[in-house]
Length: 130
Image (tube, rainbow, N blue to C red):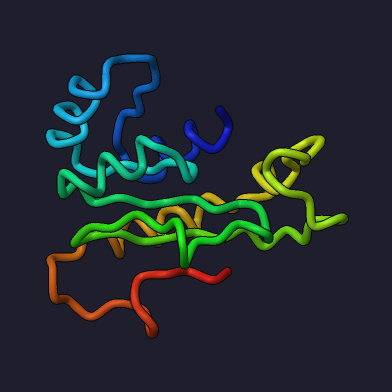
């Protein structure tokens, strides 16, 4: 919630959250200026319909090269937090890595995802390895 508020303030955009059908979500994503999401189904749906999409991969053991969103305008954010036991998403006791996310990294990723297709990006694609 803290990160969502910071992003809404820094990006000047409203945020929404809630449950809906897949089709309704896809229609909403299609109309969205951009979507920021933890690595999840909504991230993939938004990227698939062409919405500029930022995928957040907080755990050091996540596999963004394998699970990154596919689409014309996507960017990734990795946490700088070192998992003490290299926990997996299924075994992590507290997701401290999520709390350690820096909203400035997410804002920068949104800016990259919003660039028109074919615009220069960060070296090596749109992935932020920070």
